[in-house]
Length: 189
Image 1: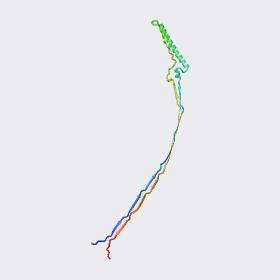
Image 2: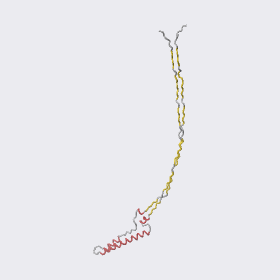
Image 3: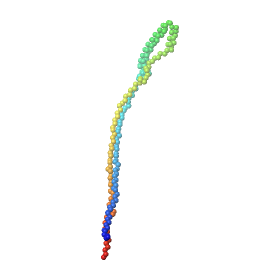
Image 4: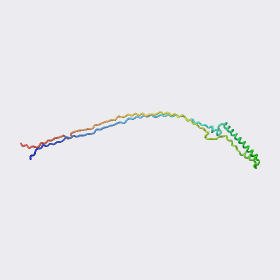
């Protein structure tokens, strides 16, 4: 059999290489400037002192130390009662003296009782805490208020954006190649 010469073909594809560095994005935003001013509220309170009235006349009167006319008036009123009591006592004593049936010495007994007796003469009135009158008169309170306030001022800053581009290198890493090798011919000349 006869060998047929063959052509040999070799092919190599091209290859592309890439190197990429990604880009960077820097974003920076300065803080906002904030200015707050407050005005305090003002209060004004005005009040005069209240008035306290104390009336002790009835207390001094109850103790007999108010005035002499009031005290003498009470003594006069009490003397009338004492006189009526004394008249009643004389009538009783007369009835005892008139009793002739009794075995006691009525005259001696009456003398003894009269010597030991002390008549209370009360010209004072009852003392109590109700004898002192107190009256308090408050004064009005004047309150004035003025409201305060708040003033807010904000100065915002825009963001600062910076983009640094990345790098992209594209290159041929391998060349395309086509190689054709013809068959070897035996040529005799």
